[in-house]
Amino acid sequence: MAETPNFPSPIPDFDAKEFWDGCNRGELLMQRCAACGKFRWLPQPMCPFCNSLKREWVKVSGRGKVYSYTIVTHPVHPAAVSRVPYNVAQVRLDEDPSLILVTNLVEIGNEDIRIDMPVQVVFEEHEAGVKLPKFKPL
Ligand SMILES: [Zn+2]
Image (spheres, rainbow, N blue to C red):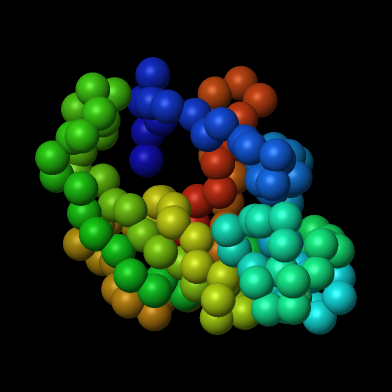
């Protein structure tokens, strides 16, 4: 997918800063509870399973499967006018079924996307110093 000037960049909040820093280094990091060991997404200060505030960031394989997707044909932002039609997908990571990221699929035509197809993360430079995690077919 060609990058589009003026397309909004993510604004990392406190809980997600390490995730975005990892993307900019080419690493996909997921937050995991350091007490009970369960992954969670989205990043948050407290474990939803055991209420611990202890957390760690773990580099994951970046492999997963397409959980769901849609094709956007109506631009909802002025910067998307030149981008439509484009896909928005949910990818379920292999490490844990609760890790489902909203992303775009690249290096594939929209008509060739299939549910459950295996994919691998790639990091695309959105603007200088800002990389976004996207996924390509394996
Ligand atoms: Zn926990």
